[in-house]
Length: 451
Image 1 (cartoon, one colour):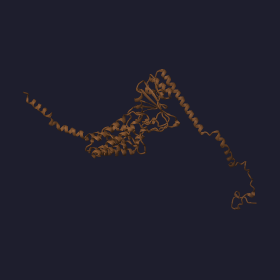
Image 2 (image 1 turned 180 degrees about the horizontal axis):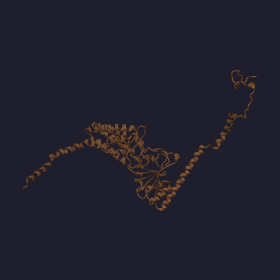
Image 3 (image 1 turned 30 degrees about the vertical axis):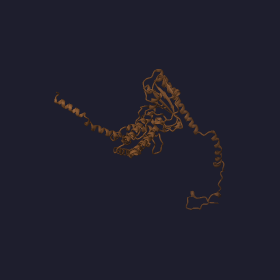
Image 4 (image 1 turned 120 degrees about the vertical axis):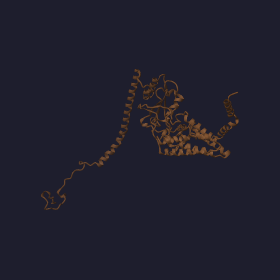
C-alpha cells in the first residue's frame, strides 16, 4: 500500500488533469482567438524602425507640392511607435531620415578629399549595387555617368512604389467587409484614419529635402568625379561621373534641413495616433479584419524597407551600364587601381590610401609618383586655359574696336574744343567795364576809368 503522501499527490494529479478543471483555460483561449483585441493593442507599439526605413525608401517618389508629397507607405502596427520616436528626433537633432545602414567612404577624385558618408540614400545606392552585381573577386571598380533629361532627386516609380499603392487600396477594401456584413463600420473608420495619418507623416516636405540635400552641379567647373566604397577589404568601388544633377560630395555630408513645422506636425500626429490606439482598444468584434489590415501593412513596410532598388528608383539617373566597358577587374587590387587611374585621372589616387594605407613597393611608388605629376600638370594646364578664356571673353574683339573708332572720333571732333581751334582775341580798353571813382580808396586799388 502506498504512503499517504503519495496517494495525496496522485489524487491532485488526477484532479488537475480532469476535463472539468481545464474548461476555464480553454474558454479564455477561445475568446482570445475569436476577438484578439488585446493583441491589436500590443502590435500597435512595435515596428517603429521598420516604418522609418520604409518612409525613407519611398520619400519624394510621388507627386510633389511645396507642402506635401505622396509616399505610399501603408498603415501598419508600427506607426504609433514611430510617431513617438519621430517626435523625439524632431525636438532633438531635427532629423527624420535614419542613420546609413551601409558604412562607406566618399572620395572626391579631383581633390582627393575623403569623408565618411552620412547620407542614408548614398549608403543604399552602394549596398544595392554591390549586393546585386559585384560579390566576388579582388576588387571591382564600376564607372557610372549621369544623364541629362532626368531631374536628380526625383526617384522613378518602381514595383516598390506601386505595391504600396495596391496595399493601401486592398486595406480599404478589406475594411468595408465588416460594415457591409454586420454594420460594424468602426474597422473602416480606424483604417481610413490610420491611412490618412500614415500618408501625412510620410509626406512631410522635410523627408525629401533632407534626403537630397545637395547643391546642383556647376557645368562651368566641369564634371564631378566621386568614388564610393566601403574601403579596405571591400570587393566593390563605385565611381560616379556627374555632369548634371546634384553633388554627391555635398549629399554625403548629411546637411541639416530641419523645419519648425516638422516639430509641430510630429507632435500633432503623435496625439492623433494615441487617439487611434484608444479607438482600437474599444473595438468590439471583427478584430480579425483589423488584424489582417495591419498585418498586410506590416508586410508592405518590411518589403519597402529592405528591398533592393535600382539607382533611378533611389533618385540617381545613370546611363545604361555596360559590364564589358564600364567595369574594371584585375587579379590584384593594386592592378585594378592602376587600371582605374588610367581610365579616369584621379580615381586610383583617390582610393590608394584606402586600400593601401602602408608603404608601397618601389615600382608601385614610381608609378603613382608619375601619375601624381601628370595630374598636377593637367590641373595647371586646365587653370591656364580657364584664365585665358576668361581674359579673352573680357577683352573686346578687333571687329568691335573697328566699329567703335569712327563713333569715338566724330564725338571727339564735335565736343572737344582746344585753344588752337579758337584763337584768343585781345581785349581793348574800351571793352573794360566802367567803375566809379572812390577818393578814399588806396592808389593801388583805384579802378581804371573809361576814357
